[in-house]
Amino acid sequence: MLKNCLLIASLVGSVFAADIKMNLNERESANHFHTKGSEKFASLVKDYTNGSVDITVHSGSSLIKGNPLKAVKDGTVAMADMFIPFTAGGGKVFGISALPFIAQSYEDAFKLYQIAKPAYENTAKKWNQKLLYSVTWPASGFYGNKKLESLEGFNGVKTRTYDKNSADFVNMVGGNAVALPWGEVYSALRTGMVDSVITSSTSGKDGKFWEVLTDFTKISYAYPLQAVTINLDFWNSLDKTQQDAMLKAAAEIEKEQWSVVKGEDKDALDTMAQNGMVISEANKALKKELTSVADKMLVNYLADADDETKKIFEEYRR
Image (cartoon, rainbow, N blue to C red; front, side, top):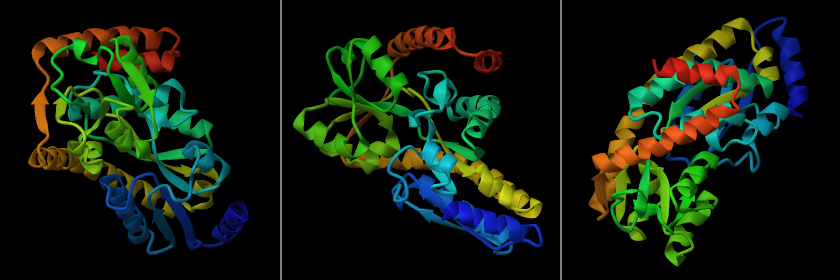
């Protein structure tokens, strides 16, 4: 059905700018800041195309239950907002933003994103889609029942991780990485199936972790990226004016959301503290230990990486 609609839109668009409707599968819940960003993006596109492109955002991944990269590639949906480190098929490139302790601030994270962006775009193109924009999450930290003072705090602790990099890290420092869907994390913490979690302040707030854990240590583990892509067949069905309008909207919302995330981070930390969770900074000794592990992981990561990926880190470290 979608492919037929694309063909019709393309044929009509060859004569004049077609009115096109498309769906965007949003991974996050209705009130999430990433979702609000997607909705504002859709609104800007409608404004800048004078209503000729109308995007409907579907939150909670209501249109996709499997791999969003494949769903957009196949045309199951026209567009999707995806958590790229967790997206199968993205290879090493999509895991860059989730490498531990490479970026230590929002400024570092944005610099790394700008350098790696051509590689992200090339990977998306291999999957028949165009990267429109990408926005970070708040820095991932460590949730547990005591402050993380040293790497010994991971020993024997069952820690829920969100991708291969975080699982490798936890196992490397003596912990036990546990892979769980997000929807099962709260109950797993309550029953003792897991003892701790590596994730963002926003996720801790949304998950009400203060009900099952006591501490959040701000280790700035990583600043993983969320990205919005569009199926290339659908993209090519748009005329040049519509494409330019969509790129303009994407650039504006990307810039805005990179600012919004900082406020979201602060709000989440404040909310958790108000509900009794102890928020702590990582001490200098711990940061040194974490950096040492991260350096080893980066060496392993780059050992079989292609030249494009290696050059990203060479430029980033200059």
